[in-house]
Amino acid sequence: MARGEKMHCLKDFHKDTLKPSPGKSPGTRPEDEADGKMQREKWANKLDFILSVAGGFIGLGNIWRFPYLCYKNGGGAFLIPYFIFLFGGGLPVFFLEVALGQYTSEGGITCWEKLCPIFSGIGCASIVIVSLLNIYYIVILAWGLYYLFQTFRDELPWARCIHSWNTPNCIDDKMRKNVSLWLSANATNFTSPVTEFWERNVLSLSSGIDNLGKLKWDLALCLLAVWVICFFCIWKGVRSTGKVVYITATFPFLMLLVLLIRGVTLPGAAQGIKFYLYPDISRLGDPQVWIDAGTQIFFSYAICLGAMTSLGSYNKYKYNCYRDCMLLGCLNSGTSFVSGFAIFSVLGFMAQEQGVDIADVAESGPGLAFIAYPKAVSMMPWPVFWAVLFFVMLLLLGLDSQFVEVEGQITSLVDLYPSFLRKGYRREIFIAIVCLCSYLLGLTMVTQGGMYVFQLFDYYAASGMCLLWVAFFECIAIAWVYGKSYFLICFFSRWREWEEARD
Image (cartoon, rainbow, N blue to C red; front, side):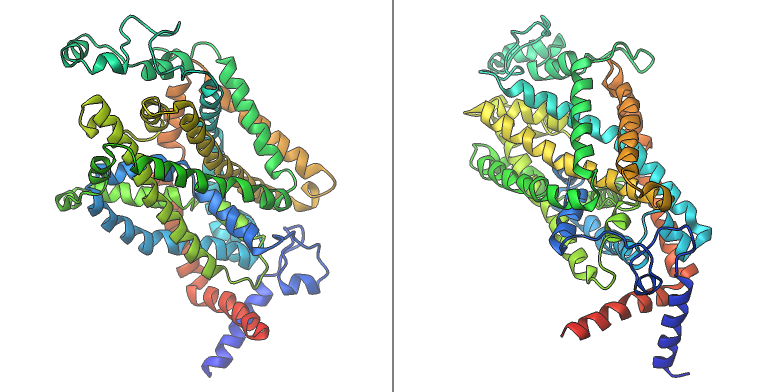
């Protein structure tokens, strides 16, 4: 059989086998239109899709995780394993998930029922992971909102040891400049005002996870506020999500640019950037460096969570998503790299002001966002302005990642029962129920022992190993079971026909 005839037969074969069965979520493939099925809503334009995906995977990890990993794992040398995992796994799986959603016009669970029913468990695993992720990730936004409210004062509350939550062991930065006093402070376990503000005011940290203590009502209200915002960002589906991201996905870049310019003009910035990028090739022999690089790729591209598949399912069937996926990949990794300059220039300034090594001030995760950086801005001129700018950027970065992941979760679940959940206002009610349940479960993390619960979720719920196994089975299902040739022929032949017709 000639190659052209073979491709034609394969297209006809998959045209028949991919028709949705009765009761399944209706797609918008051409054959669905011919059958007169209810059509799936679509993005109003391609910019809605691009900004939604950008907002979904450009988040807090780009700001507080990548720069620290780069510094810890050999500086510029860390970029070698990072780019190997990026081009060898991150970008291909990211494109695969978007194309899978676009090809089937289904969410993260039902797409597998169309292609490889025996691998439907992949979708279920993704939904379990993203559901747990949505419960604890938003707690970071509650902390950020609380900090933002606290910044609207004449003086930042973590700048000096003059508040009710401070202990006799608290010493501020002016006292730390006295070297002899600082040496004695280290010997007697003295603490900084920013650490005491975080541990004693924000968290009211208990002795351990076996002692959850009381509910922090101020944090509970902040958590409720961000869940309400998240609900109204997605309650109308892609019609509301596609418009909100015009603000949440663009403003953080402007704020990051302002912080970058401010950071590199501070004294000591050059030393901080040197620590960030100075290559140490010997670190490449450490397996942990490669594990960190792979884990960062999976987290930063939000793959194996079902969200990218759900966002892709709202694309037009013949949309050229390949081009946009490559551009979005460059934007994501580029943001991570540039963020390092903004963060480490400020840390270099803080290290110089305190007269300590930058290794003593460099932190990752919540330690960077709620201890190191707030401490740094308290040393700058106009500290309130820079603190407000930083926490607004933090909130917007986290918020669009949160509601895009929740949108992916909702889409996947609604597609399981479309005939029931898409009638009237049932979808909106279902979203409200999911948000309420997630909020109630998240209250355990805004207790006095909530930080320990948060760390358990962070370590186990969406760990790199979980995502790795999901990605592994995704590739097995498409490349070996369904067949990579069949998938490429069916997907790209439709796109090429559309491109030729448009030309």
